[in-house]
Length: 252
Image (cartoon, rainbow, N blue to C red; front, side, top):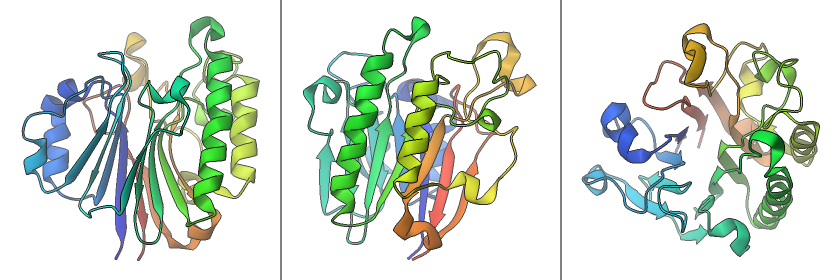
């Protein structure tokens, strides 16, 4: 069976719910939906009636972070977090285990203005890398979400202006390169080689209309799944958040 996955940083699930999210779920186009930055400890009313199993992993701090995963298929197991309280209390990683693979919903920390959380982000990068490597010993992995890093210069509209800004520091980019070198595939780049395609735009300066954006949302698969990937895209026209959803399709 083919698996269609959608991942979206909704920047507040209650807000996005009334701005096209409900209709997106109701369309039933996707087998798995992964939402980040839900900013809520409760699912929107009615979401449990739309034909999906719903799993929520909120942050301890109200109105902050949190992830939610929806699946048409009942998972074998659900794993909350990565086993480190420092990160897990921010509700950043939710893993669904299925017969032949793991699907991980991830919201990587933002290193913040002034890089005040860069060390925290880099520590998280290292921890989640180890977590994925352990899972991968058992079965292949798919990890989708907001990685909060533009990997290469083609992934950002204005690379020179943003050099060493949060999400485009040398350290964050080098980690992404190292991570992919371990045998992980940025599925979007299997299909789209050129720049000019982004998944996040600041709300300021009319940035989305001008397409001054960053590609910081990814669907990544372990090498063993490369041949199963038949589609990967950014739904740039989908509104409701400052991010656009990213999608990937794996053949059965």
